[in-house]
Amino acid sequence: MDDVKPLAAAPSEQIPDTPREPMVVMDGVNKHFGDLHVLRDINLTVGKGEVVVVLGPSGSGKSTLCRAINRLETIESGTISIDGKTLPEEGKPLAQLRADVGMVFQSFNLFAHKTIRENVTLGPVKVRKKSKSDADQQANDLLKRVGVEAQADKYPAQLSGGQQQRVAIARSLAMGPKVMLFDEPTSALDPEMVNEVLDVMVGLAKEGMTMIVVTHEMGFARKAADRVVFMADGQIVEIGTPQEFFTHPKSDRAKDFLGKILTH
Amino acid sequence: MLDIIDKYDILGAFWMTIRLAFFSAIGALLIGTVLAVMRVSPVAILRRLGAFYVNTVRNTPLTLLVFFAIAGPYYILQISLTPVNSPTALVDNGIRWAIVALAVYHAAFVCEALRSGVNTVPLGQAEAARSIGLTFGQSLREVILPQAFRGSIAPLGSVLIALIKNTTVASVIGVAEASLLMSEIIENETASVSVFLLFAMGFVILTLPFGVFFTSLSRRLAVKR
Ligand SMILES: Nc1ncnc2c1ncn2[C@@H]1O[C@H](COP(=O)(O)OP(=O)(O)O)[C@@H](O)[C@H]1O
Ligand SMILES: [Mg+2]
Image 1 (tube, rainbow over the protein chains, first blue to last red):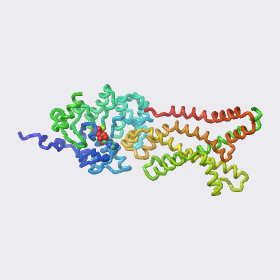
Image 2: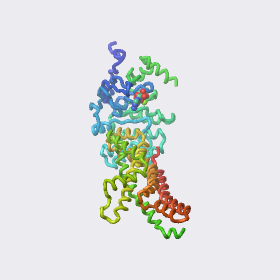
Image 3: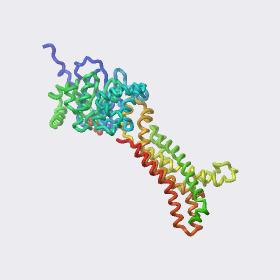
Image 4: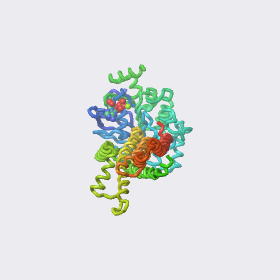
């Protein structure tokens, strides 16, 4: 009787069943695009090894939230810190911090003039100062792990979307990131390629990678997410376990949203 | 026809055209690159200066620029680009000021060709570069500029071909290049159509290989997306 779950007690709080050390902390973050308030007082803590899926209607600020975490978007107020370090403003310290934060884009963004292997070795050689041969070795291992080792000498445009996205994941992993951000990594893919990318991501989650994933793939959220964050109009409306969120959404916005995507 | 070829130094005149084109192309590439860097730099004042240069120069007829180059700096301000008492000072100044005017004029187009190359590089490339921790300089060197250069080969080729043909404008200040000789021959001889065709062919021989070269280079180096 006394092990009452504190879930209902604090609806706007995060679920306090994460005794993890914090990896990403967003505290009172605000941002505008002109008159549009895209991030409204965002408070979010993501623990080490935690996988958080961010959901919400188009235009609700999910990409902006993701991009703010490695400062591809600047913020106006509040703080963001990664593994205890506040995001630096500009210059070398920012570049160093970004090296610890992997980012996977919806449109892959592989370096178009470099081979697959060069895409994976560029960061390790230029930023981590690895030797060419060490970086090549590591690239081969990573490409094997994501299943595209046979394409190592090709250029991005010669690969399918699914293959390109797996290479993009390998490119991020090559930096040994502390946390990885995924912004709708499967939205630009043909349906038959979605799973090959999700499988790699589920594998990463199982190995304990800290991940923030913007995706509408319910299967992934159920399989891999520790928590689901639901955003609308620049605000975090609801946070819960996938189980809770999908079966008993609390807010009307979330119910409405789930109604729309689940009927598809 | 053969006697005309014998009587006039046609090859010499085309050689002058080639010299004009060669030196002004080097000047245009140098000035144009500086302008392009200014126009994409994060410093607003540099961007504005670059834009001002391009818009002013591009909208001035080349004939005027060439004329002003010799009339203003040389005749009025007495800025000589050769030793003043050299016996060929007048002719050499004409050539050199023509090169300056051609370089200044085509630099604006080189700048725009390079800038269009930068614009072929999607924003996502720079974001991906920054995301793996490359600094601003490293992103430029490793990711943006190599792709921008490949994207500007074709437009640069067009600029250079236009430059070769535009050297004919130097005739307005008496530089003895191909078109000046052509007018001279047409005035003196009766075979005007065939003379015209001869010189037209000369220009085609000069420009055609450039066109073929730049097209194949840009195709070979094109960044596939
Ligand atoms: N660079 C920008 N300039 C102006 N408005 C933007 C920019 N990026 C995004 N927005 C706007 O901000 C809002 C949130 O965008 P985004 O974070 O991309 O939402 P989501 O990823 O949830 O679809 C949208 O209304 C979008 O139009
Ligand atoms: Mg988005």
